[in-house]
Amino acid sequence: MVNDQDNSTSEVLDAKIIERITQLTTDQKQYILRQLEKFEILERREYQRFRCDNLYVGFDVDGALSRKLVLDISEGGVFIKTDLVLSAGQKVILTFADSDGRTQYRINCTVVRTVNNGIALVYDADNQQQRMKIKSIMNYVRHVGYIIDD
Image (cartoon, rainbow, N blue to C red; front, side):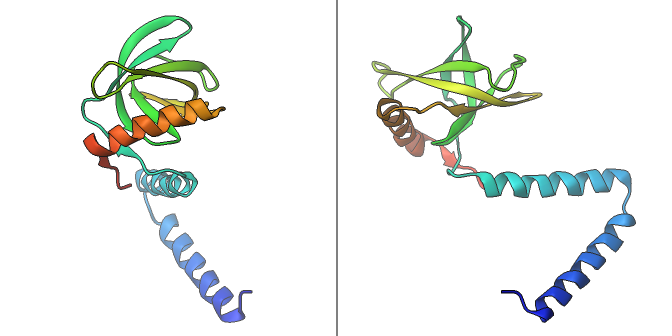
């Protein structure tokens, strides 16, 4: 339950923020908007993200195989550096090698967004076997990567 004092304080803050924003340049407003959008992304994140400087994966899209650099990774998905233009919803198969290189983990993924330097993929971990593979990969990443603080 919100009391009147909280509403009045919130309304005063809203008015002050709006007043300040109207005085900004277009570039400053765009910067503020980008920062606000980052808050939305952070609130949606379910898993902690890690950066690995030298983590490469096999990348299979429609049968075309390549090797790509992972920019960041979590238990929910991965961001891959690529100049490929893919559509949201497109299916990709990633192949991760374990630390000794003998075991390979194939993970089915879906493209969720494309930006100028890469693509964000979410894992299609629709069964226990896929979830166990992701956990194994993340156990390795926790030892070689570092946490990304947004």
